[in-house]
Image (cartoon, rainbow, N blue to C red; front, side, top):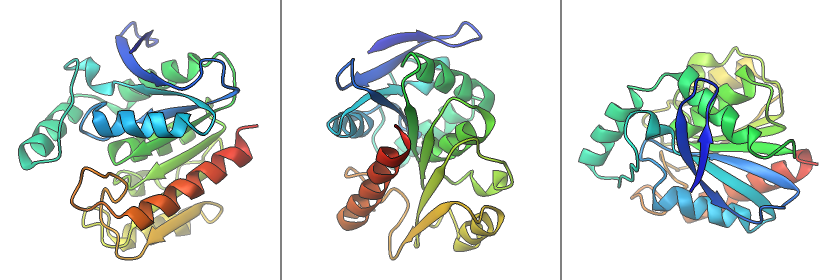
Length: 218
């Protein structure tokens, strides 16, 4: 774990993966379950494609070392922790993480809460060259923001927390974005630890994300 400091003085940790000298970088943004085994595995896998990867522990602002599973009590605890952190605070940590790459091309990819934060970071900061947001339930509420970098978004057709009307509203507000909907997929389809995991949809979404970053992180 790498120790970092945000602009407001908050010290936090970030899981690190990949060659420290890799020419391009990614910030991986957690779900509401902390930098758990899934997020660490995602970071290691993406690093294998030639990236230096950092996954900031956003929950360090209220509780350090959080690693939750995906049961009902974990979801409740994750929501409680997330409610104590403002978007502005999370973005400070994300910006500090991007700064740790010392100017190399950096993208951001986030899942669930992290998907919403990836969209916010793409619109409310100028630190990223590209952003990929997976099933971010908070994106529709901020659909009219203007991105500062290329963005692609991924949603499950059967995501009960993100109705297709929200997805269509995002498409209407952002006609220049690549917005992908995966038929039959549910919320969290990219997480192998969830019952909603869909390997075929995860593989396609990750391929699209990697192709997207290869194009824009030059």
